[in-house]
Image (tube, rainbow, N blue to C red):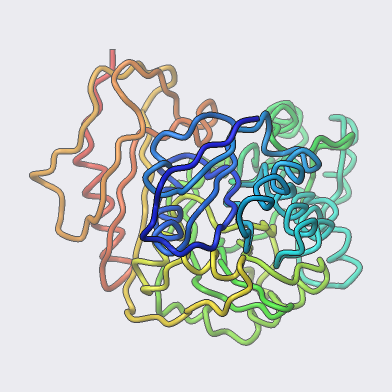
Length: 418
């Protein structure tokens, strides 16, 4: 374990621990905002690169997911500088971050509550006992157990990994033959930084309806939604997340029923302080919980929320971690969207990839090339999430305008393959 620091005299002296920022393309906006407001000490498993622009100091540790080692590293930091809060933007280290907050007497939720969010089966069991709306779910280990569970639940059904987020390994099955064909795909999709379970797969009731996510701040048990994202799924029967739309005027943002349900879910799980990303299906019978994540949304959803509303999630998450009242004032009402793009065929080796900027519409805010020449990529299911080769974001007055702009950006993407 080694520590380093650099001068950032223009930033406030209060240190904020950040645990493993995640990939640059998804998390730099959050780190940039937080780093502009506070001095940041980061725990990382390798020497920081791009992060150095936004942080004050760092500690290189063997792992950011082992709680006792992380607590020891945090105590060492606290010996030399005041530590006001701890933030984690990724699933893997989120439990270690909760243990650090508890050990250093910092604002945060009980680590047991964070673990309840990490374990989708435990979430289901607790919410079922509380009679809160969600799909029926059974945890299984083997294909035979999965077939028996699906017989009880009925087809179509959803199979998903117990501890993975981001729709990794999630697939719809319409028959026993489908389930037999796809069970290994789901069972073998495991979060390398997440917990392992003897019964690692969930077989769940398939519920109809569009899917949304709600990013919220939780302080003293009070849940306040920040923004709602409308999810776009692709590559059925796999549930690849190919885009999101955040509308600052989304009526669900002020829905008493959804806000009440959010509060009840967090209360049952015991999550009382922090930032969460909660996903629902909007069924004909009302919203049903899909999962709760004890961190901010991924896929640049926080960036979309900031561009649509003016609320800065990086500053908000830092303020909440420090026990401060966050500024939740929206100063605009726009719509922001993102679309991820993929190669057409499996095992495509990229020779050249670019956006033709001469045909991009004005609503396109940002384009980003994830893949580079020489990369070999595949669309889902072989390339679930990791098969993304580029993305674009759009800002407009309506979802329809965003959608048209992102369609145009997709047409402007040029991918030459070997």
